[in-house]
Length: 527
Image 1 (cartoon, one colour):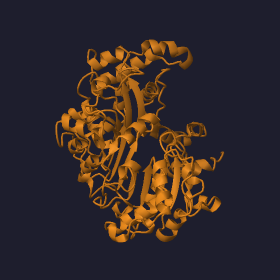
Image 2 (cartoon, helix red, strand yellow; image 1 turned 120 degrees about the horizontal axis):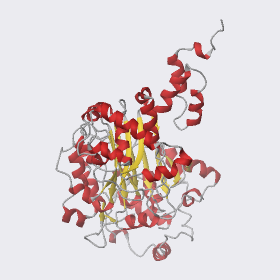
Image 3 (spheres, one colour; image 1 turned 30 degrees about the vertical axis):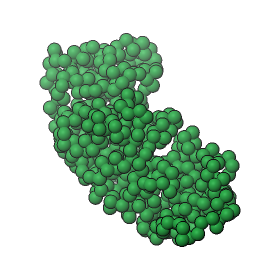
């Protein structure tokens, strides 16, 4: 009798552990593993179906949706459904029958056969013929198939969906009727998701109104605008969101416009109160330029107003990211940053914050002007600071750490993330690197990094200084090709250097020590 292969003699638990080392993106390798042996087949299938992050079809060239293909597979092989833990899909609330018929020669997808499978499943779930959901499936409404897909997954923990009216259209305001034909989701689905779902990413808030989640920890709302906030019913009106630990929001920048907030009587704080999530440890805000008829022209995006609304999280927040939407065009970024005013004066009240990503304009608009947040105004427990869209002034700002008492003793890295079409490019900081960066590492243990907007690689400024050292800051002005250089200010600094004795010390007003330091650094750097 032939002995089983050595691999087949290994315990299934060990083989499964080995199989999980294959990344979810290695679909081809996982599929090949399914063909190795009968023993490996179920183990490889468990890994293959665990992360159903489905490819999103191009809105300009729609084709057979991967969500419907997955649904067909799970209805034909129900035992696979229990393996799906993560699901991402994008569908439309439109009849796709003709589209799928046109795609049949290439995709060989039998939509009529899927309809029959779905009809039997709906009957098993208690939805008889004549129900609106049944009619939606008969009408080949793509989102109705996605609704059934949600109902066959008993162990779903991570859900990310996008639901549109058209392939190239806007998002659906209320997804429940699009998924299930009525305003209420199936009771069985609500019971299952209430226990299993831990992460949810969606484009609207209606899904939250229809269900209660017992274990939801991570929530991503991709678009929060003024009209969305106007639909809220006040504090604690969403069920199952009080225990959130992480919240990501795509926020209209007009929710920072004081005139808009005043006239529409809405604010970002309304969303936090409605969710009741005042114990967040991580908050990500992506500012978006909304096509909106501003009530106050030109707009004034008040930074302090936004930061004041986050004060309810001052004791729990550990990670805060305020960024701009990467999909927005450079001129939209420039518009937002160009209309920012009233920078935050202090962040020290965030007592437990360890990581901060924030645009430079949120800390200061012009260095030396009030209000501004200097390094000693940062959270005391901060470990990592990332500055979005910096210009040369950030060097003078960071250099104040060398001449003022060290407040953030845990801070170990400063990352400059540049978008050259908006502000300074990475080369501004990586060529002729300033000696302040190795000085910061030696005296404070802080390493400086630079990262380009659309590049994942991070460059270490201390290492770059060894290869391309710049001159001492007090010996070199800025290069003439700096587009942001103010020639009048430069002339003023040169004249003051030539005639330093115009005013005596007795005639000068008293300044705080850190203000003296900033003035000297700005003069040294030629700002």
